[in-house]
Image (cartoon, helix red, strand yellow):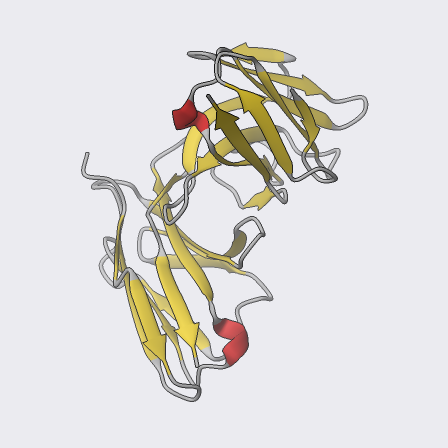
Length: 115
Length: 111
């Protein structure tokens, strides 16, 4: 399944399928990007990050792709599990040269995994 | 690593009352952030501290809001004369470098 985070805030996938969550970021000067997962009643949980000098970064079952030309970020989740059900946010760092600056969050995409 | 701790988890108050929230960051994290999150939206930056110094405040942080981090460890966020528009989740995050680690927030409801 695929979703454009800002225009389709929900994504439903079957357990075991791959998920793709998209995000359009706003600041061409941003040099650091993060994906967070937020479950109901909890704070955002870090998933994976990427710097602007990279196009792709892989973690455990997750891959982030960065396309600076069109200011687009995507999160791919392999073999989606029910525990992956949550809201996923992309965030960009506006303070160049640092990962410690303010983060600007996108609207978020609700991922629902059904058996 | 016990994570970022926030207290209380929930607060219900009447309009016009003052409220104070506390955040205990991950031990040794020198930077501490406050964010606000309303329903259906991503978190919005409010302010951050490096050690005890408050380095930046968002324009979202009106003069009714004040944050402190007196000893460079825990932080408090106070809202005076609360308004219904202040109802939100208030999130605290900390870092020593790299990604922010968030707490589970304080849910404020102003009636």
